[in-house]
Length: 490
Image: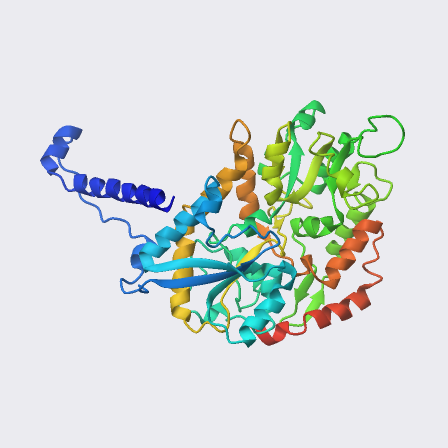
Protein backbone atom coordinates (compact mmCIF):
# COMPACT_ATOMS: atom_id res chain seq x y z
CA UNK A 1 0.00 0.00 0.00
CA UNK A 2 2.84 2.35 0.87
CA UNK A 3 4.34 1.77 -2.58
CA UNK A 4 0.96 2.38 -4.22
CA UNK A 5 0.47 5.72 -2.47
CA UNK A 6 4.07 6.68 -3.22
CA UNK A 7 3.40 5.94 -6.87
CA UNK A 8 0.35 8.19 -6.80
CA UNK A 9 2.42 11.00 -5.30
CA UNK A 10 5.11 10.44 -7.93
CA UNK A 11 2.46 10.50 -10.65
CA UNK A 12 1.12 13.81 -9.37
CA UNK A 13 4.67 15.18 -9.34
CA UNK A 14 5.23 14.09 -12.95
CA UNK A 15 2.01 15.82 -14.00
CA UNK A 16 3.21 18.95 -12.23
CA UNK A 17 6.58 18.77 -14.02
CA UNK A 18 4.84 18.29 -17.37
CA UNK A 19 2.76 21.38 -16.69
CA UNK A 20 5.92 23.32 -15.88
CA UNK A 21 7.50 22.06 -19.10
CA UNK A 22 4.53 23.19 -21.16
CA UNK A 23 4.66 26.58 -19.46
CA UNK A 24 8.13 27.04 -20.89
CA UNK A 25 7.20 26.24 -24.53
CA UNK A 26 7.62 28.64 -27.46
CA UNK A 27 5.41 31.73 -26.88
CA UNK A 28 4.67 32.03 -30.61
CA UNK A 29 3.42 28.46 -30.76
CA UNK A 30 1.31 29.08 -27.69
CA UNK A 31 -0.17 32.25 -29.17
CA UNK A 32 -0.94 30.49 -32.45
CA UNK A 33 -2.77 27.69 -30.73
CA UNK A 34 -4.74 30.04 -28.50
CA UNK A 35 -5.47 32.54 -31.24
CA UNK A 36 -3.90 35.33 -29.20
CA UNK A 37 -2.07 38.22 -30.87
CA UNK A 38 0.72 38.25 -28.32
CA UNK A 39 2.15 35.88 -25.72
CA UNK A 40 0.62 36.08 -22.25
CA UNK A 41 3.05 37.83 -19.88
CA UNK A 42 4.69 35.53 -17.39
CA UNK A 43 3.46 35.80 -13.80
CA UNK A 44 5.35 34.96 -10.66
CA UNK A 45 4.25 31.58 -9.30
CA UNK A 46 2.45 31.78 -5.97
CA UNK A 47 4.68 30.90 -3.04
CA UNK A 48 3.16 28.25 -0.79
CA UNK A 49 4.12 27.87 2.85
CA UNK A 50 5.85 24.52 2.45
CA UNK A 51 8.37 26.14 0.10
CA UNK A 52 9.41 28.53 2.87
CA UNK A 53 10.69 25.72 5.08
CA UNK A 54 14.50 26.09 5.03
CA UNK A 55 16.26 23.56 2.83
CA UNK A 56 18.47 22.46 5.71
CA UNK A 57 15.49 21.39 7.84
CA UNK A 58 16.28 17.72 7.31
CA UNK A 59 16.72 15.19 10.08
CA UNK A 60 18.70 12.30 8.59
CA UNK A 61 16.11 9.55 8.97
CA UNK A 62 15.12 10.43 12.55
CA UNK A 63 12.16 8.51 13.98
CA UNK A 64 9.65 10.96 15.46
CA UNK A 65 7.60 9.05 18.02
CA UNK A 66 4.14 10.26 19.07
CA UNK A 67 2.49 8.85 22.20
CA UNK A 68 -1.29 8.63 21.99
CA UNK A 69 -4.31 7.64 24.05
CA UNK A 70 -8.08 7.74 23.49
CA UNK A 71 -11.07 5.80 24.88
CA UNK A 72 -11.06 3.80 21.62
CA UNK A 73 -7.98 1.54 21.71
CA UNK A 74 -8.02 1.28 17.90
CA UNK A 75 -8.10 5.02 17.17
CA UNK A 76 -4.50 5.81 16.30
CA UNK A 77 -4.76 9.10 14.41
CA UNK A 78 -0.98 9.65 14.41
CA UNK A 79 0.67 6.82 12.48
CA UNK A 80 -1.60 3.79 12.11
CA UNK A 81 -0.35 0.54 10.61
CA UNK A 82 -1.29 0.78 6.94
CA UNK A 83 -2.29 -2.89 6.89
CA UNK A 84 -4.91 -2.15 9.54
CA UNK A 85 -6.44 0.89 7.84
CA UNK A 86 -6.42 -0.16 4.19
CA UNK A 87 -9.89 0.58 2.84
CA UNK A 88 -10.54 3.26 5.46
CA UNK A 89 -10.17 6.60 3.69
CA UNK A 90 -9.33 8.49 6.89
CA UNK A 91 -6.68 6.02 8.01
CA UNK A 92 -5.20 5.97 4.51
CA UNK A 93 -5.16 9.77 4.45
CA UNK A 94 -3.13 9.82 7.69
CA UNK A 95 -0.68 7.43 6.08
CA UNK A 96 -0.49 9.62 2.97
CA UNK A 97 0.06 12.73 5.12
CA UNK A 98 2.90 11.02 6.93
CA UNK A 99 4.58 9.98 3.67
CA UNK A 100 4.57 13.61 2.53
CA UNK A 101 6.05 14.82 5.83
CA UNK A 102 8.63 12.05 5.92
CA UNK A 103 9.76 12.89 2.40
CA UNK A 104 9.96 16.62 3.13
CA UNK A 105 11.88 16.37 6.41
CA UNK A 106 13.72 13.05 5.99
CA UNK A 107 12.12 11.51 9.05
CA UNK A 108 10.01 8.51 9.93
CA UNK A 109 6.79 9.12 11.90
CA UNK A 110 5.85 6.43 14.40
CA UNK A 111 3.25 6.14 17.14
CA UNK A 112 2.85 4.20 20.34
CA UNK A 113 -0.07 3.81 22.71
CA UNK A 114 0.82 5.42 26.03
CA UNK A 115 -1.41 3.24 28.17
CA UNK A 116 -3.72 0.26 28.02
CA UNK A 117 -6.36 2.14 30.02
CA UNK A 118 -7.21 5.63 28.75
CA UNK A 119 -8.37 6.70 32.22
CA UNK A 120 -4.85 6.25 33.66
CA UNK A 121 -2.98 8.13 30.94
CA UNK A 122 -2.14 11.10 33.20
CA UNK A 123 -0.52 8.74 35.72
CA UNK A 124 1.38 7.03 32.92
CA UNK A 125 2.60 10.35 31.48
CA UNK A 126 3.79 11.40 34.94
CA UNK A 127 5.71 8.15 35.31
CA UNK A 128 7.42 8.65 31.95
CA UNK A 129 8.40 12.23 32.74
CA UNK A 130 9.70 11.38 36.23
CA UNK A 131 11.76 8.58 34.71
CA UNK A 132 13.36 11.10 32.34
CA UNK A 133 11.91 9.44 29.24
CA UNK A 134 12.99 11.20 26.03
CA UNK A 135 11.56 8.76 23.49
CA UNK A 136 8.42 10.75 22.70
CA UNK A 137 8.56 13.84 20.55
CA UNK A 138 4.89 14.68 21.12
CA UNK A 139 1.76 13.50 22.89
CA UNK A 140 -1.67 13.24 21.26
CA UNK A 141 -4.11 12.59 24.09
CA UNK A 142 -7.67 13.45 25.17
CA UNK A 143 -7.85 17.19 25.83
CA UNK A 144 -8.98 16.85 29.45
CA UNK A 145 -5.91 14.76 30.27
CA UNK A 146 -3.67 17.13 28.34
CA UNK A 147 -5.03 19.99 30.44
CA UNK A 148 -4.26 17.99 33.57
CA UNK A 149 -0.77 17.34 32.23
CA UNK A 150 -0.29 21.08 31.70
CA UNK A 151 -1.04 21.97 35.35
CA UNK A 152 1.21 19.14 36.53
CA UNK A 153 4.23 20.56 34.73
CA UNK A 154 4.43 17.76 32.16
CA UNK A 155 4.24 19.88 29.00
CA UNK A 156 6.23 22.65 27.34
CA UNK A 157 4.39 25.93 26.74
CA UNK A 158 4.05 26.00 22.96
CA UNK A 159 4.81 29.72 23.09
CA UNK A 160 8.43 28.69 23.73
CA UNK A 161 8.66 26.84 20.40
CA UNK A 162 10.02 29.39 17.92
CA UNK A 163 9.29 27.22 14.88
CA UNK A 164 5.63 26.64 15.78
CA UNK A 165 3.19 29.32 14.63
CA UNK A 166 -0.36 28.67 15.82
CA UNK A 167 -1.62 31.55 13.68
CA UNK A 168 -1.13 29.44 10.54
CA UNK A 169 -4.31 28.41 8.75
CA UNK A 170 -4.05 24.71 9.59
CA UNK A 171 -4.43 25.39 13.34
CA UNK A 172 -7.85 26.01 14.91
CA UNK A 173 -7.45 29.52 16.28
CA UNK A 174 -10.65 29.96 18.28
CA UNK A 175 -10.50 26.50 19.79
CA UNK A 176 -6.83 26.82 20.69
CA UNK A 177 -7.51 30.14 22.39
CA UNK A 178 -10.29 28.54 24.44
CA UNK A 179 -7.99 25.65 25.36
CA UNK A 180 -5.50 28.27 26.53
CA UNK A 181 -8.35 29.43 28.82
CA UNK A 182 -8.44 32.68 26.84
CA UNK A 183 -5.06 33.50 28.32
CA UNK A 184 -1.63 33.82 26.75
CA UNK A 185 -0.15 30.40 27.45
CA UNK A 186 -0.70 27.57 24.98
CA UNK A 187 0.14 24.03 26.05
CA UNK A 188 -2.04 22.22 23.51
CA UNK A 189 -2.81 22.58 19.82
CA UNK A 190 -5.66 21.40 17.62
CA UNK A 191 -6.03 21.69 13.89
CA UNK A 192 -5.97 19.76 10.65
CA UNK A 193 -3.29 17.57 12.23
CA UNK A 194 -5.84 15.65 14.32
CA UNK A 195 -9.34 14.49 13.47
CA UNK A 196 -10.52 12.86 16.71
CA UNK A 197 -11.42 16.29 18.08
CA UNK A 198 -13.78 16.55 15.08
CA UNK A 199 -15.17 13.08 15.80
CA UNK A 200 -15.71 14.20 19.41
CA UNK A 201 -17.85 17.16 18.35
CA UNK A 202 -21.46 17.04 19.51
CA UNK A 203 -24.24 16.89 16.95
CA UNK A 204 -27.93 16.12 16.67
CA UNK A 205 -28.96 13.35 14.30
CA UNK A 206 -32.45 13.63 12.82
CA UNK A 207 -34.59 11.08 11.03
CA UNK A 208 -35.34 12.55 7.59
CA UNK A 209 -38.15 10.11 6.82
CA UNK A 210 -39.94 10.79 10.11
CA UNK A 211 -39.44 14.53 9.74
CA UNK A 212 -41.13 14.47 6.33
CA UNK A 213 -43.83 12.08 7.50
CA UNK A 214 -44.74 14.49 10.32
CA UNK A 215 -45.02 17.35 7.82
CA UNK A 216 -42.00 19.16 9.24
CA UNK A 217 -39.40 21.05 7.23
CA UNK A 218 -35.90 19.61 7.29
CA UNK A 219 -34.06 22.11 9.54
CA UNK A 220 -31.09 22.71 7.19
CA UNK A 221 -32.36 26.07 5.94
CA UNK A 222 -33.13 27.17 9.48
CA UNK A 223 -29.52 26.44 10.37
CA UNK A 224 -28.20 28.35 7.37
CA UNK A 225 -30.46 31.33 8.13
CA UNK A 226 -29.48 31.45 11.80
CA UNK A 227 -33.01 30.43 12.86
CA UNK A 228 -32.25 27.03 14.40
CA UNK A 229 -32.90 28.00 18.03
CA UNK A 230 -33.95 26.25 21.22
CA UNK A 231 -37.55 27.38 20.63
CA UNK A 232 -37.67 25.89 17.11
CA UNK A 233 -35.99 22.71 18.32
CA UNK A 234 -38.55 22.29 21.13
CA UNK A 235 -41.41 22.84 18.66
CA UNK A 236 -40.15 19.88 16.64
CA UNK A 237 -39.67 17.76 19.77
CA UNK A 238 -43.22 18.52 20.97
CA UNK A 239 -44.75 17.51 17.64
CA UNK A 240 -42.86 14.23 17.32
CA UNK A 241 -43.81 12.09 20.30
CA UNK A 242 -46.63 9.56 20.38
CA UNK A 243 -47.85 6.69 22.55
CA UNK A 244 -47.80 4.30 19.62
CA UNK A 245 -49.25 1.27 21.39
CA UNK A 246 -51.84 3.33 23.27
CA UNK A 247 -51.15 1.76 26.66
CA UNK A 248 -50.49 5.08 28.39
CA UNK A 249 -46.90 4.10 29.24
CA UNK A 250 -43.95 5.49 27.32
CA UNK A 251 -41.33 2.82 26.72
CA UNK A 252 -39.04 1.65 23.92
CA UNK A 253 -42.04 0.85 21.70
CA UNK A 254 -43.25 4.46 21.56
CA UNK A 255 -42.05 7.53 19.68
CA UNK A 256 -39.98 10.38 21.10
CA UNK A 257 -38.89 13.82 20.02
CA UNK A 258 -35.39 13.64 21.48
CA UNK A 259 -33.13 10.87 22.78
CA UNK A 260 -30.13 11.93 24.88
CA UNK A 261 -28.39 11.07 28.14
CA UNK A 262 -27.77 12.95 31.37
CA UNK A 263 -24.75 14.68 29.86
CA UNK A 264 -26.98 16.80 27.62
CA UNK A 265 -26.39 20.02 29.60
CA UNK A 266 -22.70 19.95 28.70
CA UNK A 267 -23.76 19.88 25.07
CA UNK A 268 -26.64 22.34 25.13
CA UNK A 269 -25.00 25.00 27.33
CA UNK A 270 -21.89 25.30 25.11
CA UNK A 271 -24.18 25.45 22.07
CA UNK A 272 -25.64 28.56 23.73
CA UNK A 273 -22.11 30.00 23.98
CA UNK A 274 -22.00 29.47 27.74
CA UNK A 275 -18.89 28.48 29.69
CA UNK A 276 -19.61 27.37 33.26
CA UNK A 277 -16.01 27.26 34.50
CA UNK A 278 -14.16 30.53 33.93
CA UNK A 279 -11.06 32.32 35.22
CA UNK A 280 -10.34 35.78 36.53
CA UNK A 281 -7.46 37.92 35.23
CA UNK A 282 -5.36 36.62 38.11
CA UNK A 283 -6.10 33.01 37.16
CA UNK A 284 -8.55 32.26 39.96
CA UNK A 285 -11.30 29.80 38.96
CA UNK A 286 -14.84 31.16 39.08
CA UNK A 287 -18.27 29.73 38.35
CA UNK A 288 -20.52 31.45 35.86
CA UNK A 289 -23.23 33.27 37.83
CA UNK A 290 -24.71 35.42 35.08
CA UNK A 291 -28.44 35.87 34.73
CA UNK A 292 -28.44 34.37 31.24
CA UNK A 293 -26.76 31.19 32.53
CA UNK A 294 -29.41 30.66 35.20
CA UNK A 295 -32.14 31.42 32.64
CA UNK A 296 -30.72 28.73 30.38
CA UNK A 297 -30.65 26.19 33.21
CA UNK A 298 -34.25 27.02 34.08
CA UNK A 299 -35.36 26.63 30.45
CA UNK A 300 -33.75 23.23 30.25
CA UNK A 301 -35.02 21.88 33.57
CA UNK A 302 -38.58 23.11 33.10
CA UNK A 303 -38.65 21.86 29.50
CA UNK A 304 -36.65 18.93 28.21
CA UNK A 305 -35.65 17.69 31.66
CA UNK A 306 -39.04 17.88 33.35
CA UNK A 307 -39.74 14.35 34.61
CA UNK A 308 -43.27 14.51 33.18
CA UNK A 309 -42.17 15.63 29.71
CA UNK A 310 -42.92 12.58 27.56
CA UNK A 311 -41.22 13.64 24.28
CA UNK A 312 -37.77 13.39 25.96
CA UNK A 313 -36.06 10.03 26.52
CA UNK A 314 -32.94 9.84 28.69
CA UNK A 315 -30.90 6.81 27.67
CA UNK A 316 -29.50 6.41 31.19
CA UNK A 317 -32.96 6.82 32.74
CA UNK A 318 -35.32 4.08 33.95
CA UNK A 319 -35.55 2.47 30.51
CA UNK A 320 -31.77 1.94 30.33
CA UNK A 321 -29.30 2.17 27.45
CA UNK A 322 -30.03 -1.23 25.92
CA UNK A 323 -33.69 -0.47 25.24
CA UNK A 324 -33.37 3.29 24.71
CA UNK A 325 -30.68 2.81 22.08
CA UNK A 326 -33.07 0.91 19.82
CA UNK A 327 -35.49 3.83 19.52
CA UNK A 328 -33.70 6.14 17.07
CA UNK A 329 -32.13 3.48 14.79
CA UNK A 330 -35.54 1.82 14.44
CA UNK A 331 -37.25 5.07 13.43
CA UNK A 332 -39.10 5.94 16.65
CA UNK A 333 -37.37 9.22 17.48
CA UNK A 334 -36.93 12.41 15.51
CA UNK A 335 -33.69 13.56 17.19
CA UNK A 336 -30.74 11.81 18.80
CA UNK A 337 -27.88 13.66 20.50
CA UNK A 338 -24.37 12.22 20.34
CA UNK A 339 -20.88 12.73 18.93
CA UNK A 340 -19.96 12.81 15.25
CA UNK A 341 -18.02 9.57 15.76
CA UNK A 342 -21.33 7.65 15.87
CA UNK A 343 -22.28 8.61 12.33
CA UNK A 344 -20.81 5.55 10.63
CA UNK A 345 -22.65 3.08 12.86
CA UNK A 346 -25.94 4.79 11.97
CA UNK A 347 -25.01 4.83 8.27
CA UNK A 348 -24.49 1.07 8.44
CA UNK A 349 -27.43 0.08 10.64
CA UNK A 350 -30.33 2.43 9.85
CA UNK A 351 -32.77 1.70 7.06
CA UNK A 352 -34.20 5.23 7.08
CA UNK A 353 -32.14 8.23 6.01
CA UNK A 354 -30.90 10.62 8.65
CA UNK A 355 -29.16 13.97 8.67
CA UNK A 356 -26.77 15.85 10.94
CA UNK A 357 -27.45 19.17 12.67
CA UNK A 358 -25.71 21.39 15.21
CA UNK A 359 -27.24 21.77 18.64
CA UNK A 360 -29.51 24.83 18.54
CA UNK A 361 -28.63 28.40 19.42
CA UNK A 362 -30.32 29.87 22.48
CA UNK A 363 -31.81 32.78 20.52
CA UNK A 364 -31.51 34.13 16.99
CA UNK A 365 -29.44 37.03 18.36
CA UNK A 366 -26.64 34.61 19.23
CA UNK A 367 -23.87 35.32 16.68
CA UNK A 368 -23.30 31.74 15.58
CA UNK A 369 -23.52 28.01 16.29
CA UNK A 370 -21.15 26.30 18.69
CA UNK A 371 -20.37 22.63 18.98
CA UNK A 372 -19.32 21.26 22.34
CA UNK A 373 -16.80 18.50 21.96
CA UNK A 374 -16.12 15.66 24.33
CA UNK A 375 -12.83 16.46 26.07
CA UNK A 376 -12.17 12.79 26.83
CA UNK A 377 -12.61 11.67 23.20
CA UNK A 378 -11.40 14.84 21.51
CA UNK A 379 -7.62 14.97 21.31
CA UNK A 380 -4.96 17.68 21.44
CA UNK A 381 -1.25 17.71 20.63
CA UNK A 382 1.38 18.75 23.16
CA UNK A 383 5.14 18.45 23.72
CA UNK A 384 6.47 16.56 26.77
CA UNK A 385 8.75 18.58 29.03
CA UNK A 386 11.53 16.00 28.53
CA UNK A 387 11.74 16.80 24.81
CA UNK A 388 14.57 19.32 24.49
CA UNK A 389 14.53 19.49 20.67
CA UNK A 390 11.86 22.17 20.47
CA UNK A 391 12.85 23.74 17.14
CA UNK A 392 12.88 20.36 15.44
CA UNK A 393 9.56 19.36 16.99
CA UNK A 394 8.00 22.65 15.94
CA UNK A 395 8.97 22.13 12.31
CA UNK A 396 7.66 18.57 12.33
CA UNK A 397 4.28 19.53 13.82
CA UNK A 398 3.94 22.47 11.42
CA UNK A 399 4.63 20.34 8.35
CA UNK A 400 2.28 17.65 9.66
CA UNK A 401 -0.43 20.28 10.07
CA UNK A 402 0.19 21.77 6.62
CA UNK A 403 0.13 18.39 4.88
CA UNK A 404 -3.08 17.41 6.71
CA UNK A 405 -5.05 20.19 5.01
CA UNK A 406 -5.45 18.36 1.70
CA UNK A 407 -5.37 14.83 3.09
CA UNK A 408 -6.95 14.19 6.50
CA UNK A 409 -9.52 16.98 6.65
CA UNK A 410 -11.27 16.25 3.32
CA UNK A 411 -11.16 12.51 4.02
CA UNK A 412 -12.86 13.05 7.39
CA UNK A 413 -15.72 14.89 5.69
CA UNK A 414 -15.96 12.38 2.83
CA UNK A 415 -16.11 9.31 5.06
CA UNK A 416 -18.97 10.65 7.11
CA UNK A 417 -21.24 11.94 4.34
CA UNK A 418 -21.30 8.71 2.35
CA UNK A 419 -24.56 6.82 2.80
CA UNK A 420 -25.24 3.35 1.47
CA UNK A 421 -26.11 4.77 -1.94
CA UNK A 422 -25.37 8.49 -2.23
CA UNK A 423 -23.40 11.38 -0.79
CA UNK A 424 -25.32 13.40 1.80
CA UNK A 425 -24.15 16.85 0.70
CA UNK A 426 -26.34 18.71 3.20
CA UNK A 427 -24.71 16.86 6.07
CA UNK A 428 -21.37 17.80 4.53
CA UNK A 429 -22.21 21.47 5.11
CA UNK A 430 -23.35 20.72 8.65
CA UNK A 431 -20.19 18.77 9.48
CA UNK A 432 -18.00 21.64 8.33
CA UNK A 433 -20.05 23.95 10.54
CA UNK A 434 -19.55 21.63 13.50
CA UNK A 435 -15.84 21.11 12.91
CA UNK A 436 -15.09 24.80 12.47
CA UNK A 437 -17.01 25.98 15.54
CA UNK A 438 -15.97 23.60 18.31
CA UNK A 439 -16.46 24.98 21.82
CA UNK A 440 -14.21 24.10 24.76
CA UNK A 441 -15.80 23.85 28.20
CA UNK A 442 -13.36 22.99 30.98
CA UNK A 443 -16.25 21.80 33.15
CA UNK A 444 -17.36 19.42 30.41
CA UNK A 445 -15.88 16.22 31.81
CA UNK A 446 -14.19 14.96 34.96
CA UNK A 447 -15.02 17.88 37.26
CA UNK A 448 -17.38 18.61 40.15
CA UNK A 449 -19.29 20.99 37.88
CA UNK A 450 -19.80 18.18 35.39
CA UNK A 451 -21.08 15.91 38.15
CA UNK A 452 -23.50 18.58 39.33
CA UNK A 453 -24.87 19.15 35.82
CA UNK A 454 -25.36 15.39 35.41
CA UNK A 455 -27.29 15.33 38.68
CA UNK A 456 -29.52 18.20 37.53
CA UNK A 457 -30.25 16.45 34.24
CA UNK A 458 -31.01 13.04 35.74
CA UNK A 459 -33.21 14.43 38.54
CA UNK A 460 -34.82 17.33 36.69
CA UNK A 461 -34.17 19.42 39.79
CA UNK A 462 -32.23 22.64 39.18
CA UNK A 463 -30.36 23.02 42.46
CA UNK A 464 -27.32 24.72 40.96
CA UNK A 465 -27.87 28.06 42.69
CA UNK A 466 -28.48 26.48 46.09
CA UNK A 467 -25.30 24.40 45.87
CA UNK A 468 -23.18 27.25 44.48
CA UNK A 469 -21.15 27.67 47.67
CA UNK A 470 -20.03 24.05 47.83
CA UNK A 471 -19.44 23.84 44.06
CA UNK A 472 -17.31 26.99 44.14
CA UNK A 473 -15.16 25.61 46.96
CA UNK A 474 -14.52 22.32 45.18
CA UNK A 475 -13.96 24.07 41.86
CA UNK A 476 -11.33 26.36 43.42
CA UNK A 477 -9.44 23.32 44.70
CA UNK A 478 -9.65 21.44 41.38
CA UNK A 479 -8.19 24.34 39.40
CA UNK A 480 -5.89 25.91 41.99
CA UNK A 481 -2.78 25.19 39.91
CA UNK A 482 -4.02 26.99 36.80
CA UNK A 483 -2.64 30.39 37.88
CA UNK A 484 0.82 28.83 38.28
CA UNK A 485 0.97 27.65 34.66
CA UNK A 486 -1.34 29.89 32.61
CA UNK A 487 -0.73 33.60 32.01
CA UNK A 488 -3.87 35.75 32.01
CA UNK A 489 -2.08 39.11 32.06
CA UNK A 490 -2.84 41.93 29.61
